[in-house]
Length: 325
Image 1: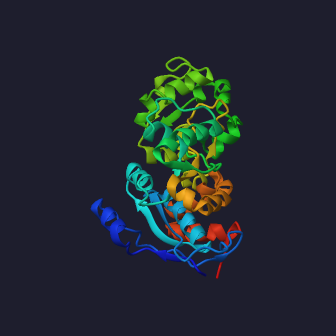
Image 2: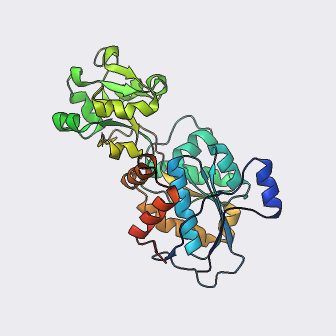
Image 3: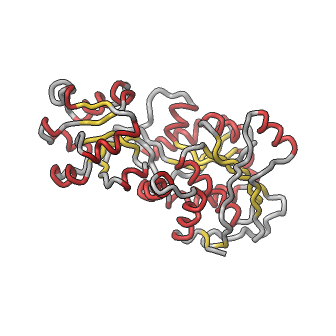
């Protein structure tokens, strides 16, 4: 295998730039891999190198390690700069080409980095808007994955079976006594939170949904509260591993209320021109990254306590992207 992995040190000016920001390559390792559907690239020069970055939460570590393993398998010399604390620092590494590729969320780019006040409706439309506008910042956006890490409403097994609903719009047909919600304080009050969601469906807060039907919880406590029946509908994030672990059922957002946060490869444009093969490899992976897949992978890390790199590698083997050496 030609590909190499750097995890402990960077050289020269890049090292100085990163240590000046308090950042250093990941000290973790990834399992050795052999080709699967990802094959070593023909005629790849010995100096073909790429730096992969990610943010520091579980899902980002998983997709970051997937990219590291994939590009190493393809023959690149890979520097693993995953586990960067914060969205803005991770993005700035790619903008400045101190890192080359980051799996990023379209909604985050649009609303946070590009400063737009309203999301674009539709996953494809949101990706296209980000793709077009971020080009001015020297960023190339590859095609998005189905994975959409956004808000949703979820039910436990008993409620799902009893009410028999599967879509957000069907909340308007539920008896008022059953319209009980567990939400966090921010979602309760924000202008794109609970009250406008109810209005979008055709429900009025205070009349159709009494204030006594709304319980406020810390974000992490909502999952267990919903599973325990403290409310019928809990605010969740669609790829959270606790959805699978607690057997929660997510309502389909058929009214397109929640913003699209599809993950896609965000690549420095200059680097992409030099090494378009990197984007092509990310394009092999993206269609396989679904909400259901990440619920399972996130649960293995957050619930079972496994290492992200091991979970990422096993998933890639199962998908046929790589094989065990």
